[in-house]
Image 1 (cartoon, chains in turn yellow, red):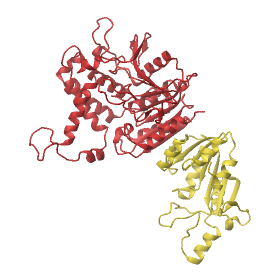
Image 2 (cartoon, rainbow over the protein chains, first blue to last red; image 1 turned 30 degrees about the horizontal axis):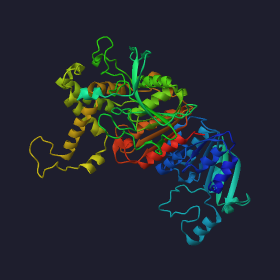
Image 3 (cartoon, helix red, strand yellow; image 1 turned 30 degrees about the vertical axis):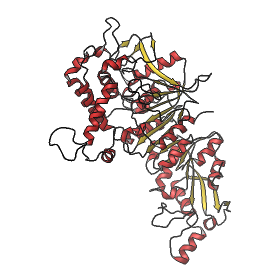
Image 4 (cartoon, rainbow over the protein chains, first blue to last red; image 1 turned 90 degrees about the vertical axis):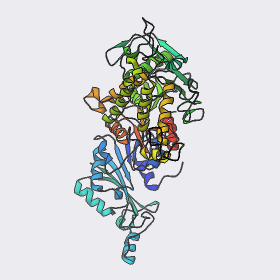
Length: 195
Length: 374
């Protein structure tokens, strides 16, 4: 099996084996395949029909749909965990998507590229231009990332909403980054949040 | 022509047990014609039931005995194909009310020996499914690995999940819906009126005369055929091109290629289909609404089906059974917690896409049948 992206590997590791999981923006089902390998009942929501076809063709339960709209079709507490990896910053209203995630599941994994990483800050400070980095590879005019967010922004939002942060992982490159000065040093963050 | 159609011998079983119908009437016995492909496992766990569409038949992967044409889904069903008969025991039965060997309006009356015609009771999609379940009981198959169907076959597949949720592990529903819309009913009514307006219909008792209502049935088929294609597909295939002529005739011959094509399709259809069967089956489709017995709540139909794996597929150019109808089913399935997959595929052929060359559909069908296998 192909090695999982590091943030997905962390999530796959953290989900308990008997859980029911909805992977929102599941792509071609890479994470779901890893979760199913350990016995998790994993289902997916994905917007791109080619990805959906690929995931169904590998035997997974995936519905073509849009995280901005179609989460509303799932009943309350339909799952134990919802997963939103690298997708939050592409949604129309990230705050509402988080509300939906924590309606359909008591806990959610949310991962996103940290817009306050030092490379991003440097690009803005020195060049005065929207940064193009490894995790944000697309120019401003065509990027799907319409709501850039930083680790501190996300913490503020969940605090404001009264959402608990149960665990946080910071990544720099493919390696764990220390929590100290994560705002600068984390390229990428994964939050496990709970109602 | 109808007499030729009814002279074909089909493999069938007659089950001498009553079949209670949704209408309240009872068929005292039922004959079901079917084809099967591939070996049944010793533990009888690898059976896949394919449900055919309105004008389909049981010859899913073998030559049609009347027309000699290849099976209607031969591209999908066979050794090494997406529905792999090296792996699955595939069964396809002619639906109740049809004209390819299963009990229908052409079936002789037990007392008089004359075809029943309009004496045959009006049947529903769920009645078709009950007849299929009787066939499976007869064959000793208590549980299916999958039920698969497109269009009306998808309606039967959904009715299977609603009626016998413990008898199937997965359901594959292609280009279908859980109810017939006003537009669907309207098109069918045009077809039925064309048949019944043909003087040769004779109130359905045309079997012994030499005059079956071929004109009415051909018009019904022409109208329906348009609904199976997309506007873009029609334009690409025919445009405004003229048929075997350089100038318009200023008359009512088939000047345009599309006219000639439809006339041919309509006429060819009458060689292989019975007009009364067309009336009964379109009626069954019009009555179909899985939410109806549940106060309009579709989720109620699937309350017992949360352990069935569903896969639904729609096509972006299918305006007869549009994506919104598949989504409605998916929403109902999600609300009961059933494992549901859904994708809208892009294909240029309109509703007929499910029968044609759409490679993504092949991958989906193969994958959804593999899922859940040990």
